[in-house]
Image (cartoon, rainbow, N blue to C red; front, side, top):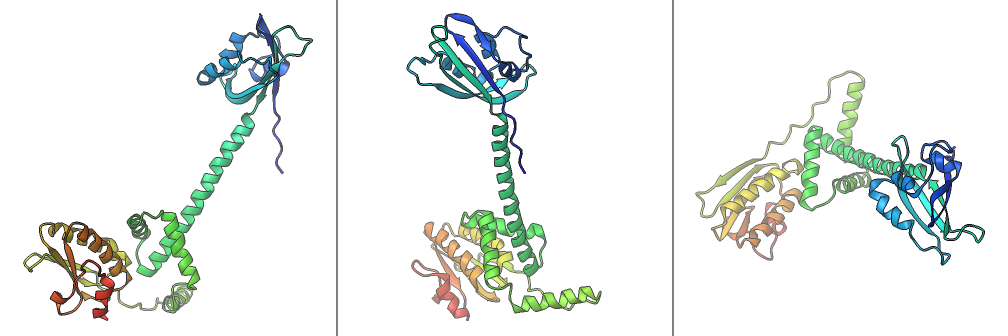
Length: 320
């Protein structure tokens, strides 16, 4: 149950022809004073307005209220102890019984509402940050389980991938986890392996022998070939995607003064989605510089290549 905070309200009156003001007890309390401690004046009132708000409040006190339209604003009040609070000031013309040119006003301590608004904003940001952190951790965990890497490597992979298409890291992590959930998990082979491993760990038995890790991807640059050539040997997967992209950038740089460059994929285990993704992006960068990138996937390098209007997907068919 939330208890409403007590709101302090001060009342004041003044007349343009009389320097002395009249303050209620609440007005003295707002300024950290006891009733009668000081003689309230305009100068005293303005001395307790935050310096950054003082000019605006000073002008507000001179607003013509004779037309019946009240005036109001928000400012920061600095009390006698030096504490700052957010208050609202509202003024209207005095009643006919008041002296000529008199003004009646209220000062309402709004600091509790202001603090609650700030706290609500901070809490909302914290909640969003925690949600973002949670889904990114889930995506990291999925990559760690599949590729057998640590959390730092999984996070670096996610961050690199998000930068390639300018996708927010949280959005990418949400998409990945949604895809995993919609597919019912990571597939029967991974499930069976986790089943065997978990039961073995419960029984304190030897962990089942897993399949051998794929050989690390190897790169080599052949500058003696008719055109600069990058040769890839091994497995092109998500974990090697950044390295492949960096190697392709080096190849493109080497071919700046050439009409074409080549990427030899004959030693790649499988030309899948990852290879097609990085090759397509690299081919576009190469073509933007006026260099044709040939993609070699069979024993006839002269007959295959990524020319304008074609894509690595079409050449990948040779490898199947």
